[in-house]
Image (cartoon, rainbow, N blue to C red; front, side, top):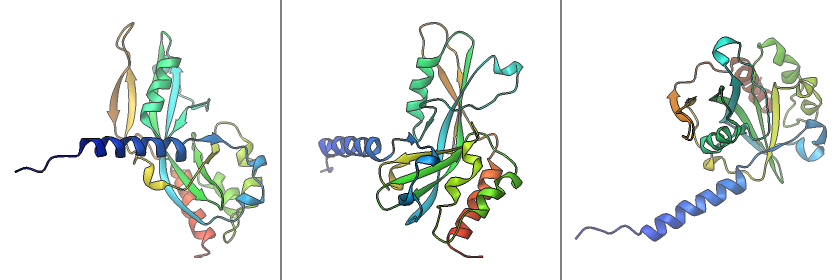
Length: 211
C-alpha cells in the first residue's frame, strides 16, 4: 500500500514559510545617517542575491539607467512582477536583474547592502578603508551612501538567510497586448557587479582581520 501524502501538513508548511518570508525578508530603506551604535558591531554576515526591477520607456533606443524607486528591490520575483503590472503604461519596458548583496546581522536586527549601478573597483576603496575588525561604525559615514542610485542599505527584521531564494536568473518583460499580463522571458545574468563583488571580498577580509 502506497504511503499517502499529508496534504494538510504540506499546505500548512507552505503557508508558514510564506508568513516567515513576509516577516523576515521584507525590506525597509535605511539612510545610513539613521544607523546608530547598534549597527556598529555585527555578529554574522553572508552573501545573497537581491532582485531589481528596472523600468524605462523605449529603452532599446537609449542607455538604460537604473534608478531606485519604492518597491523596486526585493528578494522575490513575484513582488517585482506585480509592481511592473502596476507601473506599466504604453511603451514602458521592464527587466528584473540580479544584484549581489551583503546581509549583516546585528544584535536586534539585520541590514542588507546592495548596489543598483556598479562602479569600478577603485571607487569602492573609501568603503573598504572604513571597515574595521567587527566594527562598521565608520563605514556608514562614507560619502558613497549619500550618492543617489548607487549603493543602498535596507533593514530586515530578522536573521533568516535560509528563507531567501537563490535568485540567479534575470527576466525581461514582453508586452502581450492590452488587457493581458506581461510575459517574462528568463535569461542568464548579463553582467555581474564586479566592483561591488570586489568590495564584498575585501569587506569580509577586513571585518574578520584575515589580512
